[in-house]
Length: 233
Ligand SMILES: O=C(O)C(O)[C@@H](O)[C@H](O)[C@H](O)COP(=O)(O)O
Image 1 (cartoon, rainbow, N blue to C red):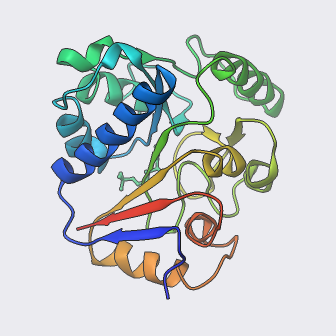
Image 2 (tube, rainbow, N blue to C red):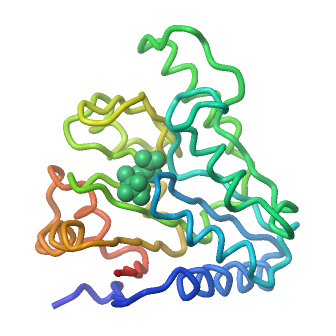
């Protein structure tokens, strides 16, 4: 039986997901005068971003940040910051305030440098409206979500840290990352998870059975703190 905070939306369209996000942001603006939205990178959110930017919303009251960022320069093909700039912060949505985790990058990413980058990024996001109103999550076929990659260095810390953000170096995906920690994701007022395709659906179904740190998304699904809507297609 699905957890009480979990709502599944089969045959989801990017428009339906965008309408749901926009409604939550409008409510936040009406109640608190501003809204905060964290979005995932990767490929699947692109149609959602393009539908969301068309929503009727007072974008100047919306703060946008990433759920996770690959530690690459902004002009790198894998930059989530560039992805958001290209696909979400366009038209009326360009009025949103986007807060990047970093600007300049050091040449070598030692653990010490990663600690300093994470500390600096934590400072950058310290003044944003918090908890997040909405966090939009994706999922990989290894059940990672945000940059919570099973077995990665930094993973256990990112599951437990009281900081908003931490670094993670995945074994199975390129680039060291900065990611919102599990506690800060679960502190959001609302979580959305978007998954597409049979393979991801099977992983989701398996992860829905029980919380297991080997399947990071299971820690988001099997929690009793935050409403989670799952959008499948
Ligand atoms: O890598 C990132 O930047 C992510 O935020 C990550 O968690 C992503 O959501 C999944 O890897 C799914 O990625 P796709 O949408 O590309 O399948």
